[in-house]
Image (cartoon, rainbow, N blue to C red; front, side, top):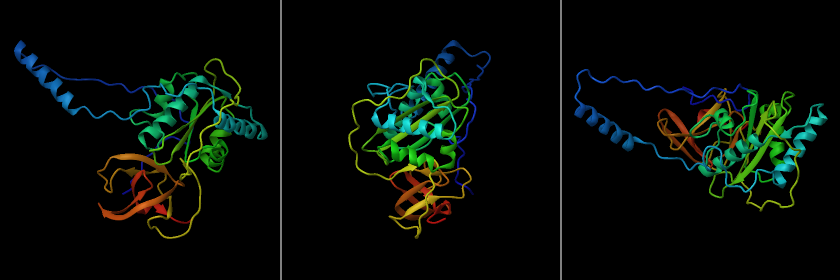
Length: 305
């Protein structure tokens, strides 16, 4: 039994269409007007009781609280490193897409606000978010995520050392980009980064510029990406660093040590996490708590190559 879940974060998938919803129901033949009203009232009451709680979203469909979508100093530094890297590899530099900047800023803020680490949002796919933020110029898009570092240099190194993220940065088809970070003191990783890549411009673009202000310092935290590769040695014990491996896609992380608990994230192979608690035996698995994120089965965690 594999506790894994496929997600498209390190590939170059096509933009999916919005899901359609249909409602089907038939009124009993000969029903009276009073019984119809009664049924409608019962239905509305049931929906009001069963409505799921609203997540602590970062600000709506694509709105963010930051005062400007212009890159700050560290975001601009990462963009400069990215374009220098592409030029060294014979590729065209990327220009900023306003829509992709909005999608990246929303995602980074939402990761911190809700304390999860996955490409899909809590209520929609990552592809739908990009579309909701106004980027519809092309279906050829890609996304990189990272967490744990405040500075652009360290985040760029995280992505460069990951085969999937590196491939996105060196994709010759890409022409525009949006890169944004966000900080949340109550989240597992503190700083969260998102990069969105697109193969066509969505309107006016501009070369990255470095503003005068600098970001406030933040305490050091565990760093991760959706596909980081690190080697460690030692046993699976509380305080050790574990590596996700053998899933073939990603390892589900639950909010409790049981398969019936809600899934709060999905960590791809190669992700490194500090074990915060465990082991706990349940449902035929041995469970370990990964940092402040949640619980995962031990059969997909290792401490060495």
